[in-house]
Structure formats: C-alpha cells, structure tokens
Image (cartoon, rainbow, N blue to C red; front, top):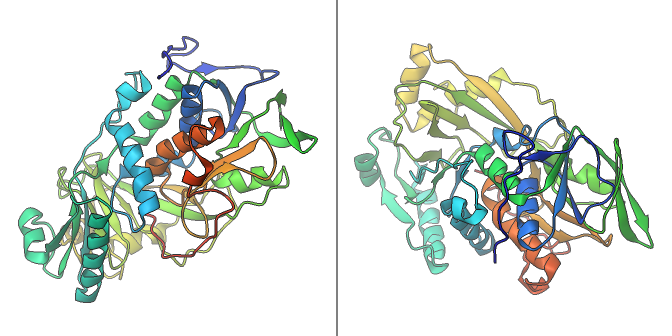
Length: 409
C-alpha cells in the first residue's frame, strides 16, 4: 500500500531542506538528480525514510536538466524494454503514483520516428521490429518512405523508411525529479559533499561528508557521473566511465512543427524534438572519448555547426530539409546545455548491493536515466526489502558484461 503523502511545509517548493546534517538516518541517498529522487521515493514506499545529500546548492541542477526529456519503448533488448515499460506506467499515472499534484510532467505522446536512407539498414530495422513484436511491443510500426512523408511532410525524399511508435513521447525531467522528491518525504541536505564512508566489521556504519558524519546502515550511490568516484571512497570499483553529452536549444523556430515526434536520423544518430516553440537538437558521436567527471563542461561551438550546417555529414538537414532553411535564414538563437553519460560496458544500469555490506548503487543508465530510473529505483527498493527475488535483477553488479552497440538516444 502506498504510504500517505505529506507536503513538507519548510519551503515553497514543498521540500524539507535541512540546514544541518542529521546524526543518523534509516537510509542515505547520495545524489540529487532524477535517480536519487526516484530512489528516495521508492525507498519511502518500502517503509524507509531517507536523507538525500546533494553537493550542489539545489536539486536537479547538473545532468538531469541537460537531458532530452523523452521516453520510448523501442529498445534492442528485452531487459531494458521491460524496465522502461514499468517507468512509463509511472509517468502516465504520476499524480496517482506519487500522491502529489504540485509537479506535472506535461507529457506529450507524439512518438519516436527513426529514419534511414539506407535500404540495408531498413532491412535490419525490419528484423528489429519483428523482435520487438515478439517481446509484446506490437504497436511499433515499420513504415516505407512514402507513408512517412504522407504522415510527416517535413521528411525529405532521401528517406527510404523507418520505424515509429505513437505512444513514445516527452516529459519535463525537472518536474519528474521534484515530484519524486516531494513525495519521498525525505530530508534534503544541499551544499553537502560526500567525502568517504566509515566501515565497521566490513559493513557501512556512517557516511562522511564535508559537514560531518551521518550514521546509517544503508547508503545508495546515485551520483550520476560522480558515482564511480564516490564508490572508490569505499574501495569499490564500478565498471563505469563518463562521456560528455551536449544539447542545442533553439527556441522560437517557426519551421519546427510543434506536433512532430522525436525525429532521428538512424544513419548518423542526429535527432531533434519540438521544445520551447522551437527544438532541442542532439548528436551522440560514438567516438567521443571518456572524460573525468566534472561539473564544468565547456561549450563547443563546432558541435552546433555539425548539427546545423547542411554541409556536415551529420546535419539534421540531411533528411529534414526545413533545417537548411533555418540555417540559411541564420536568425534563430541557440544555446548549449551539457552533461555526462555514466556508461557501463553493456550500456545497462547498475542496480543493487556492492561488495561492501550496506552500500548499494543505482547508476550507469548510459543515457537512459530519465526513462529507466523510476523502475530501476523501484527494483532497488524491492531487492533491499526482499520483495523482489535476486534472480529477477538483470542489472546486478556481478553480471557478465557483453559489449553492444551504443544506444543512447
């Protein structure tokens, strides 16, 4: 049964911010992004109150707001598909699940449209759709170029076909994080950096911070790109690396149809979706090398030009001609946001206990944190309480890692 929801009155956003570090907690959650907030919420549903620690002055200010803010059920593996199915159920019933109505996700189910100009790739995608149907996701369509242009006239003549699911869509990632945070009834300590862990007899006894120690038997590392660094403070080596991800924000672009789906060039990885009466545009280069976790990611003007200049091989104008018009008009404003993916070798999350008793992790979503972390956090809570059998966790830390192609849209 879901616990009764209580609005904390300490601040206008409904959250209970503490100006001191409590001496003890039933659970400590490390990280104030969407994963940490979802973790606190589902731990509360399982009967545990948490104290959430965030090193920055406020929650949800690093990687989460730099995300695309989207969700889909078009996956190339059953494990992630089943995970995100459960998350989508949370999204579509967010007010009922969380018991709060302050934060609305502003969901728009406009679909994900994957496009290719390559007949061979289209054949590969036909086989993928057949697998997806076999996994029960029968609402994914395989479309030829003519049908795509009938539905979406902005698509160019080079497109041979693609796949589409109408139920995929967009949401507000900050509202998702804050809604979970309020409903978790957690206490929040911001401006508080974790500096280590105290162990007694091989078990966690306290989390150490730059503001003192907090005694606890359970700590969950949900620190996004800093998760690996935090885990190493306890001698834990997580198989993660961080990779920079950038987003171009272009408000007020009249050529962008506000009803358009997420539109993806499946041949290059460049993609965009309507936002702010314009669009968010992204491109993930699989050759991007790992870089150390950081809160200060420099902007890169060449990234914008690679996405927008029609002469670029990864330009969004390659398959959507109106982007060339936007480029030639040259009056649209743009800005950049940046974050870091926390990547695992198989691009699936790490969820569960570590080798140090009492320290758990919820991280490594490899670009799928918005859509995967609600169900991932629910899984973690179920594993901790014993309601979910260990055998039902495909994301355990000791699993064999099979490398696969990057899928981080």
